[in-house]
Image (cartoon, rainbow, N blue to C red; front, top):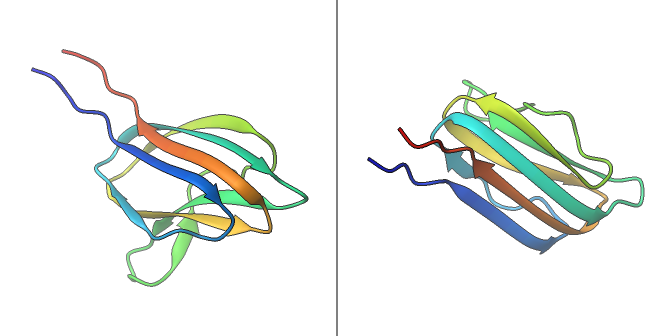
Length: 95
C-alpha cells in the first residue's frame, strides 16, 4: 500500500494566502524569502472557527522546521516579508 504525500506550495507571495486543509501527521515546512524584518507563521484554525493559533515558531530567516500536526484548517500568516517561497509537505513512510 502506498501513501500519497500532501504538498502545499506557494511561490513569490507577499500577503497571507488562502487557508488549506491538512490531514494530520508529521509535516515539514521550508521557507525562503526577502525577510526585511518580517516573518511567516504557520497557524491552525481554533475550535471557535474564527481564530487562528500559532503551531510553529515564526520564520524570520530562510529555513526548515517540522512538527506533528493534527488534521484541520491551516494558513501561512505573512507579516512584512516579501518574495516568499514556501512549501508544507507531509512526511510519508511506506509500510
